[in-house]
Image (tube, rainbow, N blue to C red; front, side, top):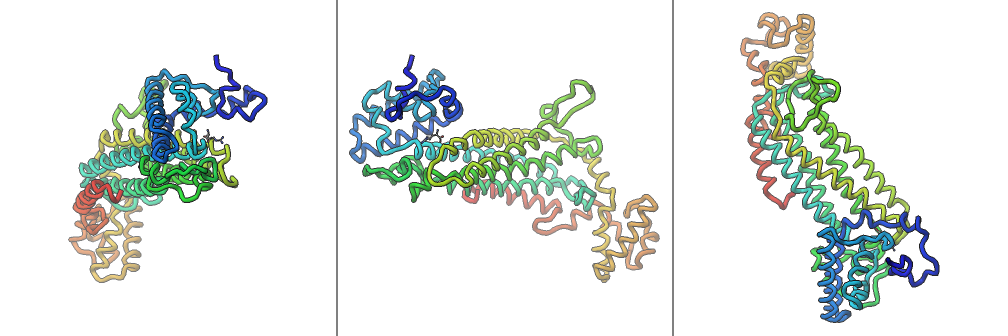
Length: 467
Ligand code: ARG
């Protein structure tokens, strides 16, 4: 139906049609059509500015805006005919506009290039996605705080080297996850601030000969300012790399939560149970209930780390200014956004559906001499130097290992073999409750500190400024 050679907006300089395979190979429309709303938003702002500057007439501007809105309605409705020979989202939309409104459509690209256009589209799109991602992070943080509140008194073993270390409260553990996400959210906020600078006006690379008003276009599009340098504006994708780095760090955090949830829901730990709706069975082993959701999120961290490396390598050694290499920024970015949002969403939903096996957690916390440090601190309070106290408790632990009894299960007389400073009141520090309650300072695991930390965390969540 179309003459695939003359239809191309840049065909004027060419004497032979594009090789059919090269046409398909170089086209990006299959994936960059996802940017269409932002492409149209950018074009409307550009046309508005051109009219303000007297470069387009008001009638031309109105025809362009109405035409672009009609194109958008067609794309929204799924009736738009994307043509691969028109290469990308930009030329598809511009060509459809001209087909609708005639001459005025051909004037839209005045003072503009696809190079500043695409850099603008990706920034506008990513800005919106960051706003959605920040909300998803906050939703997960809220779910963590709700669970932490419910489990503020729950005692489980804290680990170092995955060996039982000291008793902690589950609420405290969940607040550690909250803090990691808080920094993640800040990283996205910071990335958004740096990306919110407008490339339009840079045109192909050197700027344009028309008397454009870049401040005005930037204001129309909600950018903080126009980019200072036209070469930089069309070429660098550091904002995409920064975004993907923030995403990779967040996924690294989710992979750590995943690992813990997977361990805790195993028969060997049996600390928690994930709801059936977040697990799947085995096609061969009828007894299985597998923690697929955390496993899949842990796995997805890998592809996002890969996208970060891919984008860094894409940008590496590129000479100024725009190079077609940059077309390759989109698929990794889209995939990062989709998988990141999906992982955050499923995690927020899953957190409200965790059942804790309190008795199992307690039993595990009692094993492994987890209150040994409390005994050493007790001896220090009785006037013994910490290093000596450490030695005394080490010997008591060795005795307990031989006897197969925990410190709290030794008799007073047995404990006194190691130090005469040990009195009957020692048993209150050897209990799990005594141990966690004693860590009663800012940032500590005592239940009342956990509750205070939750109050502070909720207040921070509600101040959008710091996030
Ligand atoms: N599809 C291209 C991209 O995504 C648009 C810019 C093309 N510019 C060019 N001079 N070939 O980067």
